[in-house]
Image (cartoon, rainbow, N blue to C red; front, side, top):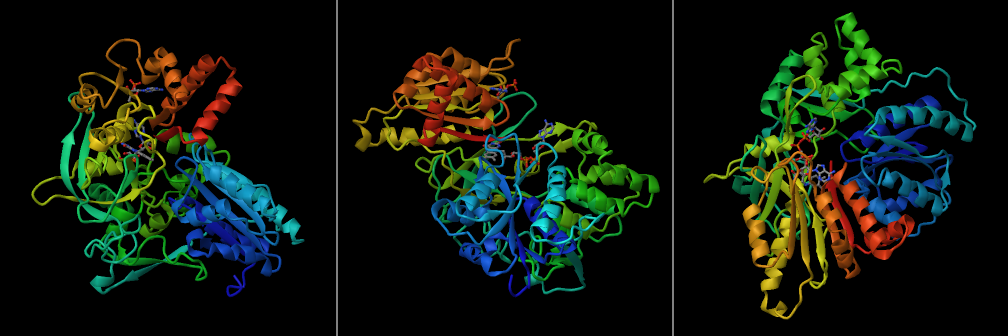
Length: 607
Ligand code: FAD
Ligand code: 2AM
C-alpha cells in the first residue's frame, strides 16, 4: 500500500470471482470518493500485515467475503480465517468495513462475512460502517449496490471528505485485452489451472491448483429404468500419492460443451476462437494480473475458464447494452439493469434461465467483444462430489456417484449440467479418458469409536458418502484385531423415486444387510404409489428408535438436498429429541446444537 500510495485496501475471499469483482469495483470507485485503493487477493497477503495497516494514515481495509458451502471460507481466505480463529491479534489501529456474499438457501447464511466483521471488532479494530450482506438466492448485485450507495457517503463523512453528488458508478473494465499475433507454444496455457504444462508434466502434490489427471477405470449406469441417468465412476489414483478418507469430497474440473463454445463464437461474430490473447489488469497495482491463466486462445478460455451457462449478472447486461446496434435491444438491456426493470430482469433472466448464449440468440444485434464476456462471466468452478468409496476397500481409486443434470428451461430449451454431461461422455477403454481431480478434506467422518451407533440419512445421490462409510465399516469389521469389538448399530435411511428405476446400489446394500454391516435399512420409494413416501416419513415412524440410538451416543449424518430434505430431517430430529427427552422445543434445539458442536450431527448437503 505504501508503494502504491494507497490508503484503502479491498481484500477479497472469492471462489467464483464475484467477491473478487466486487472488490475490484470498490477499488475503482474509491477514486471518485477521494480514496486511493488497491484490491488484493487474501491469498496474496501475509495476514500478519493486517496488524500494520494503522501505519498508513487515514487508511481503511474493506473485506469482500464470500461464504462457501456449509459456512466455510473460500479457499483463498482459509489462511485469513484461521488467523482470526486461532490467534488474538491486536488490531486497534485497523479501520475496516465488511461486505459478505452468501446464499440464503444455506443454513449458515453469510457466516464468513459475519465472522470477519465480529472478530475484527473483538480484536479492537474500528468498524467504519455496518457490514453489508448480499443474497445470491435473491439479487446479490442489487444488495451490493444498495449497500455501497450508503457506505461511500458514510465513509467520506468519517474522513471529513466532501461527498460527491450524482456520481456514475457504472462498473469499469478491470482488464484490457492484448491480442498476440504469435506466441511461443510452450508458453501458451491450454486449460491448466495455474502452472504451464501441468497436465503434460504431472507432478505431485496434487491439489486444486495442480489437479491430477485420473484415468477412468469404471463408468457404469446405476439406474435400471426411467429416463434419468446416475453414473458410477471409478477414478484411478494409483501412483499419484493422493490420499483420502471416506466422507471426503473430490473436486472435478470439467470442460464446457465444445459445440456451445463454437456457437458462442458465432453469436459474437467476427472472432477467431483460435486467436491468442491475454487479459491484463488495468491497475498495475492489483495483485491479480489476469482473471485466469493467460495467454491462451479464446477457445481455451471458453472451454476451461469461464462458466458460459451461468445466469449473467446485471452489470454484464449493462455492458452488453453498449454493443447493441438495434436501439430497441439497447434500450431493453439498459432497462433490465434499472429499478423499474427489476421485474423484467426477474422474468427475462432469472425465471427464463437465460444464459449469455440465450441473450445473444434472442438479441441478435448485440455483438460484444469476446474479451468483455471473458472478463464478466464467472470463472468455471470445479464441481464437488461426495466420494462414494473408502480407501480401506479401494486404496487406488476414488468413486463418484453422480446424477446427470438435464432439463428443459422455461423457454423450452434443453440444457445439460456442465460437469455431469462432460462426465457422461468419459470412457473407460484401453486408453481411458482422464479427469482432472483433487481431494478436499471434509469433516463428514465416521466416529472414531467403532462402538458408536450411526444413523445415515441419504436420499438419491445423498447415499454416496454412506456407501464409502459402509465399505469402511465392513473392512473394519473383518479385521481380526476388531473381532471382539461390538460395532455400533449402523442404520440407513435411503430414498429414491422408484424401486425399479433408481434404487442405486441395491444389490450392494442388500449384501451389506446380509453380512450385518448394515443393521437396519429403511428405503422410501416416493413415486411408486399415489402418496409421496420420503426418508422423513420412515424417520417419523422410527422416531423412538432414532432417539434411543442418539441417547446411546449415535452419530447422525445427513447427505443430499440442502433445500428441503435436510431441513425436514432436522425438524424430525427435533421432534424425536422433544419426545425422547420430554422437553420443549428450545431445550431440544439446544441439545441438537450440542450434538453438532460435538461432531455427532453432521450434514453434507448441496443444492
Ligand atoms: P451445472 O452446470 O452446475 O448445472 C446445475 C444447475 O442447473 C443448478 O444449480 C440449477 O441452477 C440448474 N438446474 C438443474 N436442474 C434443473 C431443473 N430441473 N430445472 C431448472 N434448473 C435446473 N452431485 C452428485 O450427483 N453426487 C454427489 O455425490 C454430489 N456431492 C456433492 C458434494 C458437495 C459438497 C457439493 C457442494 C455438491 C455435490 N454434488 C453432488 C453436486 C455437484 O457438485 C454438481 O453441482 C452437480 O453434479 C451438477 O453439476 P453440473 O456441472 O452437471 O451442473
Ligand atoms: P420426489 O422427487 O419424488 O419428490 C431422491 O431425490 C429422493 O428424495 C426422491 O425420491 C425425492 O422424491 C425425495 N425427496 C424429495 N423431497 C424430499 C424431502 N423434502 N425429504 C425427503 N426426501 C425428499
